[in-house]
Image 1 (cartoon, rainbow over the protein chains, first blue to last red):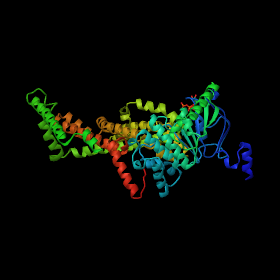
Image 2: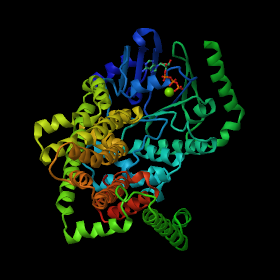
Image 3: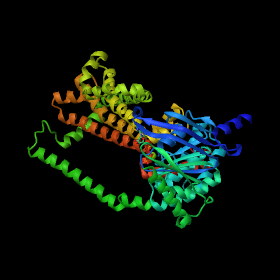
Image 4: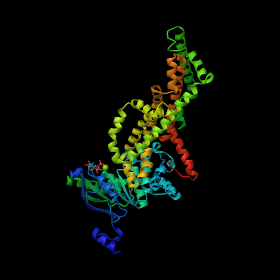
Length: 268
Length: 286
Ligand SMILES: Nc1ncnc2c1ncn2[C@@H]1O[C@H](COP(=O)(O)OP(=O)(O)OP(=O)(O)O)[C@@H](O)[C@H]1O
Ligand SMILES: [Mg+2]
């Protein structure tokens, strides 16, 4: 208890209940011997259950930041903690989803969903039931035994989403997961994502370069600017989650879009 | 699904006309050959009468039956050499592919060996292993080694970076990453490598037998040709054509089984099977 209190004091002004799940302090990543600064002095704290959108133009370092949180990429300097522990490599409470579905072609949808369980250890009947439930949650109940080649791009990403949830991780990192899909499918999947994330109560870090999408999904939007990649501002989104798509038409929503745009421009 | 299948593959009646046309073309070709021989347009010394080849088949396979030991030997050389050579190639590629440092240094050696005509080493091998079946099998092994080796290595190197990241983020062990990702990802290329190897195995065995041997179809062809028994030589050649054809079809079938997910109909069938296995409580496993 005392250890926790000390943690809280150093981490910021949060009480024990809202101890940050992810915290970065002066986080920095450079490539090519320091000549390319991909992420500069990132400082942020993410609370449990929060949905954060990371928005910014191509090449500003969004993927780099995400891969550092996932433990796939070493940071150059600064500190980065997940559940209060310094990130030193992939962590079982963190799972990542990529722009491409990255499904295994030789496995059916449900076998793909079971992959994380297989890798972690033995697959039990309970795991199999859970995989089926997750496919139902992502709307693919009738396609559990289809192979990726028999599924559309949108359906493949749903399988990848179910697989992400099967890991049991409470921190979900999504790197433009629906970026390769058409507008209709993407909007639909965004609504679903909000519903699902609410249901499993995960902390979510979602990368996109679409401003409306970023605002629609998030509790807070981190606005990143390139060269060097830094978080130029954080925009709070006051709407309750989950939300209907129609909020995107309101004046309040448009004001938020303007705020995000203004953050970009003030940084440029 | 079945309607699509019907459109793509020729329907019953259509297929019959295709077969009839094939028979027609075949009979015309053979007749033309026979007529050309009888009219003296083709020298029967080098191009024997089709009828003579036909009786040759009877003689070699039934009346004297002397082709069997040679056919058996050549097939054994091909089979053993293929299995051993490609297993060695795939195995070595896996060892090299799993060690990043080795992989980087292997490249020039692979290229040099690739560029060397395999059969040039034939006489060396014969010198080392003698005239028996071992040297021939060794040559087939050599011929069958490279395509599976290079393809397996390429397949393993070609695994998408994002998939590797995914396995890393799931904290998969090296063995898991290999068995569940790299090996299956490389299967299409491995299968293609096996097909290439098999295609050269038969030729490799024959050339080896031509160079130096005391038995095998290559030896038989040499013997018949030197005694100007062309009809019998043609029987051997046609036997090899048939052998090559069946080997080719066999490898195609193997590819469809190994890489089922690249074949639409087979994918659907495997899906049904896995569904049934799941329902039976065994669960899915790849
Ligand atoms: N492995 C690497 N080696 C060198 N430079 C890199 C590497 N990975 C990323 N970079 C550089 O770091 C910067 C940020 O890249 P990053 O992939 O994080 O951008 P991003 O915001 O995800 O872009 P996008 O929206 O196009 O995905 C870019 O300038 C990129 O060229
Ligand atoms: Mg990116």
